[in-house]
Length: 115
Image (spheres, rainbow, N blue to C red):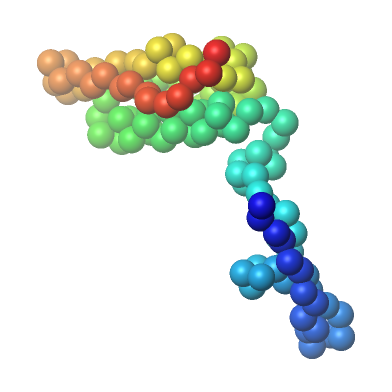
């Protein structure tokens, strides 16, 4: 069982900061992933959203045909399409290189999906 021991350390202004045993201040109980503080949706869908967007941006930067609408999709719209626990089969996609259509890229996401 993990304990979160807090100590007071005075600062120059006379007040104190909460410090845990690791020397971290202001992080009283960060047992969860930080992305869970972003919104009320699942952490899993947020991670897939960020990963997918990064891959799309990388492909576009390398000359592959990637619609801007796919890159610019909001997290809410992503969840509307793929749900809170995205099926990795639905996330896979392919892209074709703009100057050489014989170059194609297939992107497959891996992960645990508990349906």
